[in-house]
Length: 476
Ligand code: MN
Ligand code: MN
Image 1 (cartoon, rainbow, N blue to C red):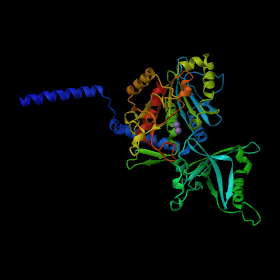
Image 2: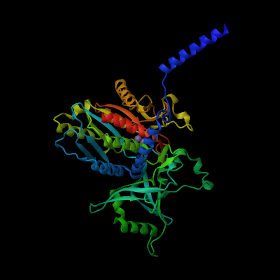
Image 3: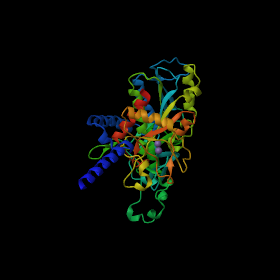
């Protein structure tokens, strides 16, 4: 009797197990799903991404880097009215800070285009237009931070300076200083803990105030007993010798202080990458390199947008709220005798931006069942927005279904995740601005730890799977 009972329960367990296998969602670490060969491919691919990341600190760097790489692959500047045929490769650079690349497909633009969009600006400290000052024989730059940062994270980090200066005569000087190991770097100072009692009583947002984010740039005086502000004078004299600029030239400059140095492998197993600007260079690079790696001319035209100003709300003529992307599609459509709006309505877009990765040290802010985890693949996010999905574009179930089938069919490891618990906050991406043009749009991206910090972390398998997702989306 007892034996028989055990048998029944065994059968029941296995039936439950069968049902469980059939019905339950099966999430698995990419390290357990990928073969050793695939993992090696992911690590090798990540090395190329790290090379890009170390050289593309600001949007101008990323635009120059990608354009140079694309030109080597045969991409030429797009011109209104040009004759285009399948296999042609064009790009449009918007003011040196945003770029659109297009690979013309066999069907031209008749069935719409496949768009992959990411942003190439990242949070940082921008110099004010009148930045140089001296205080107690120390010289500084005043800054206005760019994007959403925790201000207290930015002091005591070695900083490099990237950007451009337009001189009084109209000539421009490109600046990159602090990246070569022989270059000097710069730094925002902080108080020693011994004397920080009052500072530590400030609210976290005020531990370091915006006007305290001053960058130390010199401490040696110009040798002249009569002169005032001798340290500032000595610094400006060095800048004049090196770049031929005067104090007023900063007014027509864009100079950005960003963490200096190259990205690094993280962990004994080297499975992660630490570096500045993963948000959103990691999606920019994966989208861009996927386009570059498409071997066979795709059916539909593939378009990659690398945009600027996402971190400040996408406004301005290089942000995706501007008409530059729509104008490009209008002009591209015209080359094929089509209307831009018809092309838009038939198009599909992966709007790629990083997502918050689950951080076991701070588990409370994410809802685990709907959070993105490192090493669980590219994250597909149906909707963004905050508090009642405010500001979301919310991809339709039908389009999510299309993307899901595409990724599964091509064995791309992917997951779904939402940015944070419902009432805690959230964030937006450029998805809404593209969806507003009547394009089927969904958010995808790489989970990140320490997002918007001077040193952000991603996992190599996720980077690689994001690249694969773009490749199958645009390359088919
Ligand atoms: Mn972003
Ligand atoms: Mn961001």
